[in-house]
Image (cartoon, rainbow, N blue to C red):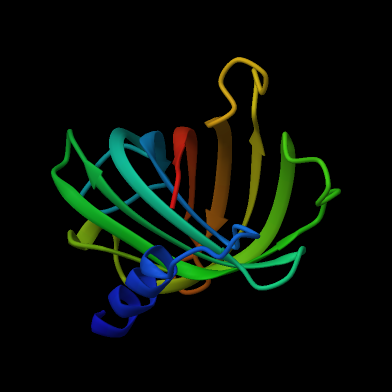
Length: 160
């Protein structure tokens, strides 16, 4: 876990050069987890406060990391990994990505910590009026537990 937190801090703390290779976001998630022991209902839902960091290694390759706090079930959740952009990288108002992230949490029902392939989509719904607002979603599937999860997100991009 110490190594994952270190990777996340690097993703978030790396100063962005003029080309803006690094991005930092804050916002909220609506999140659903499939059939967990500590969260009794299938696809148990929660609302999370989220911090998300991204560093672009090339136009199509990015390192990503997320830290989230669940309000209803009082937990911390984290992820770190890589993502490939599968849409036009010149279109800054829409993107889709495929990747794999190591995901974990502070409560047993969201564990074990495991690798999860996933997909994400993001759109800037009003790029002229609110260029820093991003709305999107992501889904993932745990390779060990074979449980799925998904999040719908509203995030605000911060200048670095």
